[in-house]
Image (cartoon, rainbow over all chains, first blue to last red; front, side, top):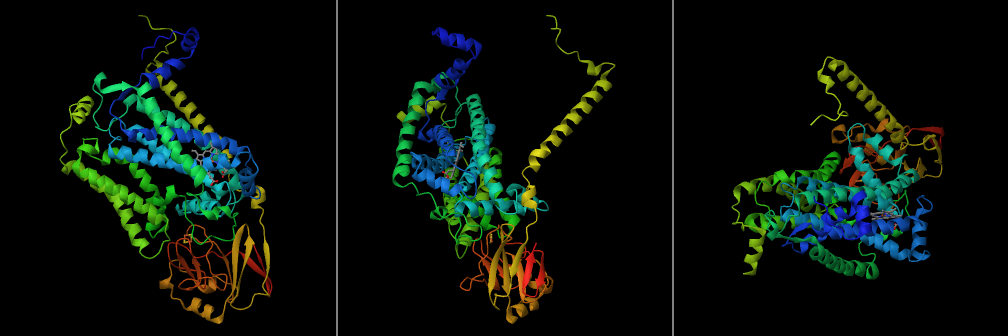
Length: 405
Length: 185
Ligand code: HEM
Ligand code: FES
């Protein structure tokens, strides 16, 4: 890592004492990026943008929010009605969570199609999964804060998942609650942790980027960078492309914030929490629905909980489950179809997760759950051995020139 | 090039080696145990505080609960179901064969007086409140309670019969103060 020469005396003076500008130069300006990245590569920077929005709006919401069971709901209503632009901060935060998940889910499926998790990017992949887990925890904790009916019963059902742990389950649940039911101590600690976790996510993102800049970005051809002819400088080429993505993102995101701010929400959460009455149809936020469907597909309490957590844990093994040497789905004629089938399967899980657990929804949910695990644990290892991949281009540069021709 | 003088000598391999190894391991172990013990106050601060633990009790007047009716009272922040069972419901509960039960318990061990069934009204699956307290509520396939969250059915003794819940609705500690009043807790 050679230090770039800075002309400006002040920058030079600072950089010799704290190499901030050298680091910035290496990780943004001159970072060699494959020249063939398509728009699916925009969603990483979009996720980071969403994280920044969440932290910014969250800090300002926290200035007007009161974490107490008798005041939380009213303080959120006060944010909506009396606090200047409170409605905007809250709607940005509420919809921001949904868009954060949209970006991250697209980002993950991008990785699955192009085999981005394969060597040498396994740790990069793991860090991404850790970010997903931390995001899920953060979003769950945040959803409890407005203390509506869904907040309360979501918190009750999810914390009760831990009661499935043999022997110590009940102690864990009491410990999580700080009492014998979801109550004020629970709300207080959830607020504390909801404030903390986004900064943990930020640190994980930093590690994610360090790992990325060590192994370099993958690309739609799945072939590693072989020389300077395969890359272009990150700045200005990808800074401008990422900013263009931010523009499109804002258009869609703000469309929801201003014109359909409660589209992703549940009306029941505008009813204050009532510990004595469970709403007849409780559902989690949409981004949890596939996992909720897996939980309900297994007619056994502990089994359901294991399957639900297992659905994410199994993804940590993906770099080894997928035995194919070829990274990109472009050159894998059979895998390609299974990928789309897997995507449809996840959508079906999400759809069933939002329906009541009765009638034909039960077998559909069970079949979709079975396929989720079959795809990852059986189909992918076999495919790598049986499938005959297409011929790979000689290099990234060659693949681009061939497309042109 | 000469070794800088600050490089620690590799003495663990010298004549004092075993002694140094012992000191290193012993110090590390004490440090690790000390750190683990220091974590406990943090963990334990999240357990129920003294005021939360201070046993609360709830007294319930049963005189106004007619046969076939139920009331719900609050105890420790949780709903407690009190049902004045009909002769039919008692008979059903008593005659259920143990082999039909997921969590086999005799009905007579779950009540102090057969007509009064007292239960903590929290589904043992994931903590929702089962329906069945009001006359118009669905009572499930076994005439007791039905949990709408994931479809658990409880019978007229509050025992789990169908659905994902693993255990019967628990019976809280209670005592009859008079013939028509109880104290829960
Ligand atoms: C990873 C980033 C974050 C996610 C995914 C997230 C998610 C959420 C969600 C889903 C809600 C419920 C919104 C509603 O229905 O009203 C919420 C509420 C809240 N969050 Fe966050 N949040 C994040 C970061 C933060 C940060 C950094 C703070 C700063 C303290 C914060 C403070 C709050 C407050 C005060 C509320 C309650 C007000 C309200 O309900 O709108 N959040 N969060
Ligand atoms: S909480 Fe009652 S069935 Fe799940």
